[in-house]
Image 1 (tube, one colour):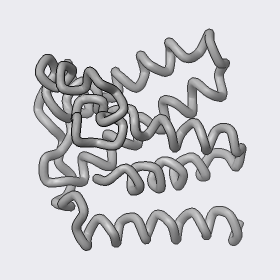
Image 2 (cartoon, rainbow, N blue to C red):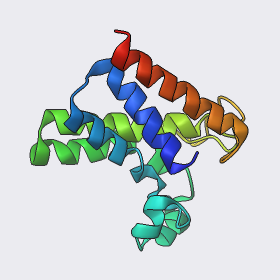
Image 3 (spheres, rainbow, N blue to C red):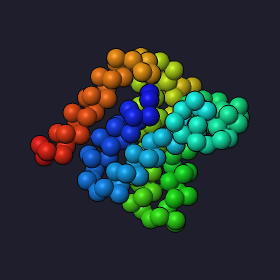
Length: 147
C-alpha cells in the first residue's frame, strides 16, 4: 500500500474510537513507521538506515508485526501518555493490517509465526488500492457526519 492509503486507513480505524485530533494525527503519522524497512517508502527515504533494517529483518516482517507496534507504543507510553501510546499502536497495527491485504502479505504475528498473512490481492498503486482508499474515505465521512 502507498503512504496515503496507510494514513487514510489509520484515520478511518481511529475514528471508530475517537474524534480527538491529536489521536488522529498521531495514528496517521504512526501508520507510516512500519515501512522503515523499505528505503523506497516515504518514511524509508527519510530514515537513512532503512536499507540496514531491511537487510537484517527483511520487508514486512518484524516492523509490520503487532509485537513491534506494541513495543513502540510501550516505549511511547512513559514519554507521551496513554492516549498517544494507543494512537501509535493503532496507527502501526493498521499498517500491518493494510499490507496483509496486498499480494505480498505481512508477518503480523512475527516472530511467533513468521509466515506472512495474506488476506487479499491488492497491488500497490492499483485500481484496487484506490478503491480501498475510497471506501476508507467514505467510512471516514460516515463516521464524521452520519453519527
